[in-house]
Length: 131
Picture 1 (spheres, helix red, strand yellow):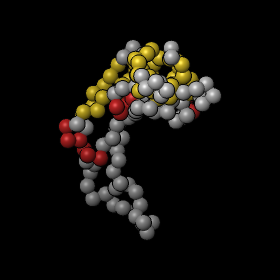
Picture 2: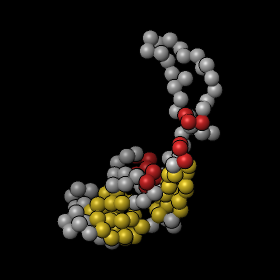
Picture 3: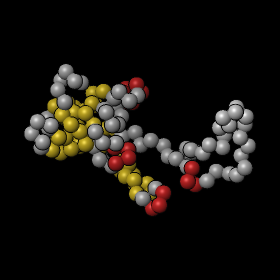
Picture 4: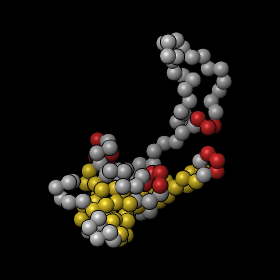
């Protein structure tokens, strides 16, 4: 079962039905979210349209954390996922997406990259009150 982003199933602006005049096309196909978790590094390479490559991180233990005061970036281990405002279910399960708050050895950090799309976990240090 795959995700399909075609619009043949939608209704016309007038409210009438659109009759499918053809089948599904490969360029309308989507994919399921990577749902990056904490754990040993696992990546998946997906081919996109035009031969582009998308690296999806399925799990990772490390993040590149930047200190905005000094401008220095370090690769540090993620100890746990504190909060994920993107989705209540992701929050409960500890899924890492853009905007998730993670705990590292340097302190709390907010994820600024999209691990399921970019193939890297980048984060910026935040204060305790911001979390």
